[in-house]
Every structure is written in structure tokens, then in C-alpha cells.
Image 1 (cartoon, rainbow, N blue to C red):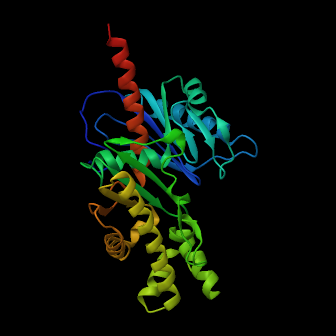
Image 2: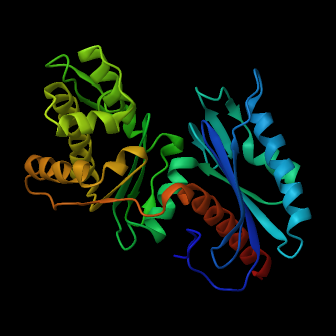
Image 3: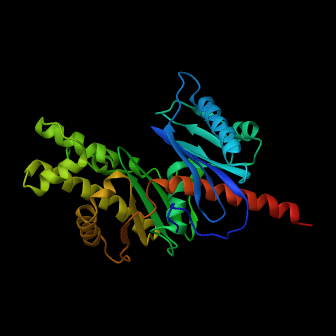
Length: 320
């Protein structure tokens, strides 16, 4: 790792462009072969009433043009583009983003035509998880799950050193069924109980008092508020339930907790480890650890995809 959050690498080799499109903002940068990110930018994700996908392509084209003028000493040979929602990485398609409004948008094809570069396309959380798996908190594990917990929950699942994609549907852990604490005997989805957004909204619903996010609920629980303690505990229970399913079905050995909720540190991780331990029987006990790459994990993952695509192209050219 270096001070800019990039992966280690050889000092030689071409630079790549990396774009990480999120539901609220997007990041861009030129990533050198050393892993150093230059020209890092954060900007609002562009929106359009009928063509947000096209607006994203227009924005990355504009940024790429500016980079060419600002950094002529670092010509780029490929680009990585990652987006949220359901994606088909094999075809380069954004299958669906309910928040941003696209459906079956050909991101890879449109970006490649606009940039004049080979473009590697992928899922934002999947690519951030790939970075954590290769260079971050899950480095050295063969079987891991990276959970990103914020307003919602998304994940990246790795089995035998490979990320499962499932045609874009693997890793949607936020929609995994869990016991519903509000309706005993029924189920809900993990995101409705275990996300930071759910923790705040469930506390407000129970008490009629507004809070400034999940962190305040945790602080209230630590101060002895019984409703805050209940809501926080039920969130931990739901997360533990889903983690145990991953351990039981996939043989997960490392669970990386990322996103805003992971900032709670041991206040989240310590009870989560205890509950996972109590739910498991014959299974190996997973390491449950915080993410280490921070907000630039997606950008690092995007660059990684671009570099792998470039390597594949060059290998095919060199093959007899």
C-alpha cells in the first residue's frame, strides 16, 4: 500500500484511467503502475430525467479530456468504469439501477467509443471488494465476503480465490432474508434491519425521536437508552445471521466490514463476533475485520480491472 491508497506494483508500465460511479457522487483518477493515484477528483454523479447512463458517459469523457491536458506525461492505455446496481460484467451492461434510473445500458460499449480506449466495466461494490480481497483486509484469504454497510447493504463474495458474479446477482446480501424482529415468525431483508439507514429509521419509528444517523443510536445505547440498545442489538443479530449463512454455505473464512457503519469499530465488531460464534456449530470461525482501503477502494478496484484488461489485450497480441 502507498500513501494514496493504491496497490503496490512495479514502477514501470502504463497508467490507466479509473472511474467509480456511486449513487450520490463519483470519483475519478489516473492510477499509475505503482498504484499511486494522481488527479483524484470527487464530483456529483450526473443525473438526467431519461438518460443518466448517457450523462455519466458524457461526464467521464469530459474528465478524461481534461486529464489529457493536465497530465501529458502520463498517457493512459485503458480505463476502468464501475457503477452501482445490477450489472453484467461479461457484456458490459448496467442491467438496472433503481436509484439512478438506467436499465440495460451498454456502458462498456458507449464508454469505449467515447474514450477511444479499452474499457473494463464492473460493479462498484464488487470492484471495491476485489481491492480489499487482493490488497486490503482480506489479503491472503481464499474465501471471503466484503460487506459494505451504509444507507443500504451490498457485498462481494469470493470463493476459492475468485469473485462470484452470478450474472450480476451475486453479492446482493442486503436483500437476503433474515428473521424480522418486528414480526416474530416472519422474515424481512437484511437491509431493513442491519443497515445504518435502518438503524436510524427503526429507532425513530420506535420512539418518535429523530436521530442524526446510526452512530447516534449507538451512542444512546451506550448511555443506557433501552430502545437504542434493542435496535442496535437487532441489527447485529441480523448481520450475524447473514454472515453465518455465508460461512455455512460458502466456507467463508474472512468477513470484511466496510461502509459507514464499520466506523463504529469494535462497538460493532466485538458483539458481531460473539453472535456469529454462538450461531456456528462445526464450521470454522471466520475473521471479522474492518476494511482498510477506505473511500478509494472502488477506484483502486476500477484501476485493477483496467490493468487486467490491458494485460489480457497485450497477451493476445503477443501470442503466436
